[in-house]
Length: 76
Image (cartoon, rainbow, N blue to C red; front, side, top):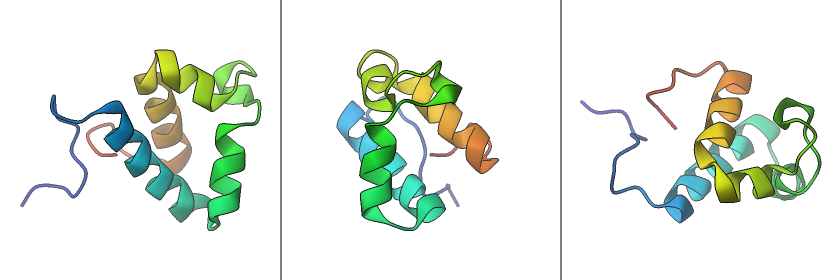
């Protein structure tokens, strides 16, 4: 059985962000906190806004969230 969230070449940036939003919701527990997370400076991303980093390097944001959630890099 395949994992629920598998990164494939067909995954778009929009789909990836939606899945990351779901993961952030599971971590933070509130949709408002998820939205704030994307739009506040983050020390783990060199004080950049996650949404800005995601626009140019979605993998960096995905890797950061996975690290924070202690997830293996094969899932998101």
